[in-house]
Length: 571
Image (cartoon, rainbow, N blue to C red):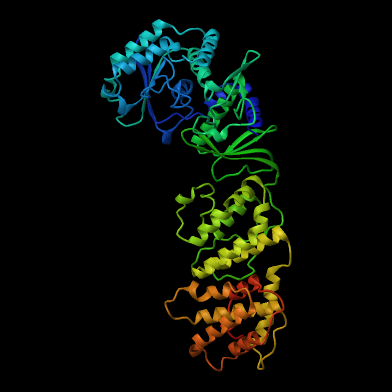
């Protein structure tokens, strides 16, 4: 898949060249200085990402040269002391806090420019040497007079620059560029990149005058990582690519780093539409077939997820949210949209807000130790199912959630009830019904509950006690009775300790046992002549269900408006 992704990138890169990367390149915060050929400071540019203007010609001038002058990684420097972070003589990168003679010593300066004058001092190993000589043969040797001139300017000016009032006194970078044609920067950049682009040249092999080796991007292989080796073949390198491919792959990862730096962590790639990068909480917004990358900015760009997407459908048909349980919001703000949910983005927003209290969408890839959620049950559900939700909303694959939504949503509804979030639990139940009907089909829950409520209402208002007709009516009646008992609780006892035994009961025997406990506990508060309660309690006690405990109907009965407390209708 990585090879295919690079091939998709190649089509874009061949059309635009390095500008395809530089157009999206974001420089680090710091001070950028341009020194002209006479040694005079021509521009001082303060980079602040919060005020970035990519249309500024001065910014773009620096951005092109900054990209060409940066290190592949801090572990592949020209300066082995890692104080100077540039890769060629036309630039000089250093942290401002290191601009003092104790950190930036004369020895460091001498060694930096000595290597630039004679790079074979650095590239002593056989393969490094061969690759550098190959690059030098292609691009030529650097101009020694120019290197010496740049070195003298740095030695004469570097320690006085921080006295300049136009330069901010902070801990960001100071980056100095010497005025020269961009082509010269490109040549010097290539001479650094070619011998350093592979992870380690000791793994390189030459086949038919072409070098093959292990790329440096998202890959490491050393004595501490023997498990990455392929022990079954002569050369244990897990991934071989040639020198042309490795340069192209490096540029691809440079492009990905630009996207990650800009907060665009969801990357969609296809041969038909190229590359589309989306922010962290945004999917592609249309039907899609191709490859998906989830990236993150670290010391290098990190790939956290990589998948093939086949036939993703963005728009949704047949997902309708109704108030199957009527909700009287009062002053409580409504979070659940009603009506048709038309696409994956709106579905994600509804599930994130209503089911997960806005904790899902921001925590798809959060480390468990960094998950700041006090509700342990909510936290557990997120950790267990967040990958399945991400696959659904961002890749169009609902398989995991389709098989588990009924269970996880009921868990969250019970959790909200136990935490006394009654309006939210009703919204969750209504959302659950709509999503389950979309995923699995089945009978309309709203019509079913309205019918059960109407039937039960007649029976509890009857002058003589009648019987419950079926299991669904029984579990709805049980939920109603449970809601009534809980309403009588005047103690400070937590809701979850009162209601958990009944919400989680797996047999009718357990339900009846807990109901009798409730009756004994609250009998003092029940009016003996309460016709509605007496009828309801008698009917529940007198019926034995044939099937299993129906959690859905029981919870629905509990959340439904109380028939016992319902006002009498005027004749």
